[in-house]
Length: 402
Figure (cartoon, rainbow, N blue to C red):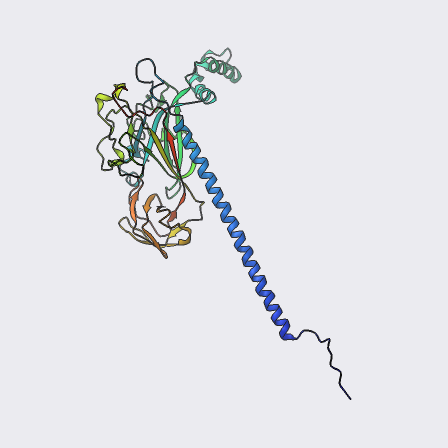
């Protein structure tokens, strides 16, 4: 008698285990792939957000430079009324606080002053506080509506100059590590003076040093408006008749980083060549409009910080004289060959090489900052750098009256 074999037998236990294992591997691979895709998507979104913020900040800073006016806008007496252009390096804290450690460690920032073109809406906004006292005194009634109606009338009747004096500077934003700046702009109408206290006021173009006793930063901050945020660096380079290239060294064909169109001797002695002006003459040139000079081009370098939380941090203490340091999350730092500068706290540092977790060959105190001590855990910031080149329509680097 022959036994019949069951040809319809199911999967064996081993076969089921193998299939389940393959499915598990496939599911894990799928989860990893989805996680990677989500991570790349989020990284792309963060990168796009940073690019958008940097471009917006760059446009906000570029426009005031494009609006600068030169000697063509004259008052009939020779030099244009308030057309002097000044770029000076000053401490980012009030000059009357020289005894504090904060002043010693404070970065030096460029202050740009110039006459600029303004639109009608901006001029009306600037006229309102100027004419408010007159409106209050001459209104038919004493109600707020009466005063507002009189103010509207005075603003409508006021002559238009279409220009203002501008002070533009990157101011500390107040974060704990003092790494961030807010780019602030102050506009004043021709002839308008800025009240400093109850006893005195100043013309912002006549103050020798912004941030000093004549124009304290506290007054400037209150009177100015922010036009760009999340900035960790702002720098102006200026093309003169001696400039041969933007990357050349100062004094050897490089740009100027300070400027005085009147060449009036406002630059004192400094160990930093960026704070000197090669075309300066002295006080005798201050009232001579025939030798005024304006840059041909302005190069704007602006860095907007990557989002908070996406920075590397110091693994240990970094002292002012150190040239190497270990970091945590080094993968968040770019290749120094592509982006050599990082900002540690309030100090800019140039990185030689990035090997493993180590930043090596550090060149300390760059971009107007000083070498400082930094505690472990201090953020190592990078950001998106934008470079803009603005041609100055009234650029003039000869002083023989041509």
